[in-house]
Image (cartoon, rainbow, N blue to C red; front, side, top):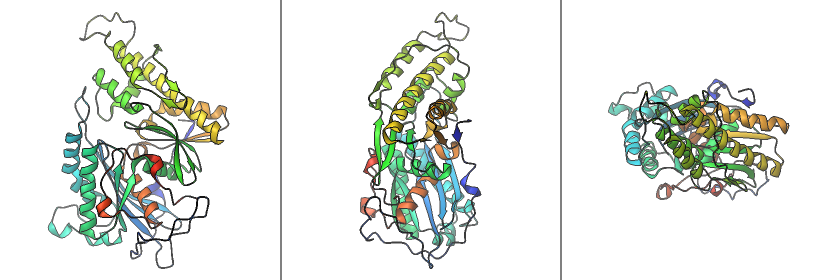
Length: 406
């Protein structure tokens, strides 16, 4: 991935000793106007903030713990467990929610141990509120967007921990979590962001304390398009259907004609999927049956990737030209795709620009991005009252007031 700048990992950053918690209150001073400098949250008495982040908007259950100091941001723990459905199927909200409920307690305990906030991952009563959690300043959770059942299951767990430990809640926009973690890991200053995942496809740029959406999908997300085509071909969902399509596409050599649907700054992927499904129906149904279609499943995966990624590169380049940026940051699960990074890198080089991307630890849904974005908001005085902690499946990226940025 020559064109992409990929971080080696934030866990290598130096850590600082935590101090006693002193959380800001929700009744903070009025936010500074856009363009004004953001005051530092650190004081001589408070030189460290720690947050636990809980992610469960889709089939990934993540728990992350992060520390902010004046000089460093340290990943203390970043654990994840994935619900994997059988080949040819997707993940239903009720089954995914049940998975998150079944694995949450164990994963949270393991994260606390990994962060050094407790010494045992057992389920003993004495460990229900280990002494080390006194160092945690807030409990951050994904408030949306995402699938209703999984979101709610993790939100309930977040409320339980907040009440059990006596900590404030911080609801986090899932998309903003991806962006802020990507910015931190890669060091991208003010990039155009391509956010591509199973549930979202957006081209974003920052302006006046909001992440403005310049273009997006008009129907299904690009990740959903790839995942659903994996079901058509009965490709394994382990470790992820999109990853397996990527590997199969490397064996393809014939570029088939598929609809290319860009409308201004927006894209449409449902028609491409329908066309790819129609072509897949021409393939042999049984092993050993002669292939009269003239193409292979690998050719279909190759053609699908090339087409949808070319569309994403086009609208990203247009956004770069509009805002005068030379940086592109790719975030979201589809951002792990090396072919997408390669195509985007080729475009960026021709413009004298740079592509930034992270590896699977940070681009795939995870708890540490929720902890990081939530702690950034908390340090400005933001908290989420318990009565307002309901999840929102359509929580738009540009609804968030980004008070922590100039």
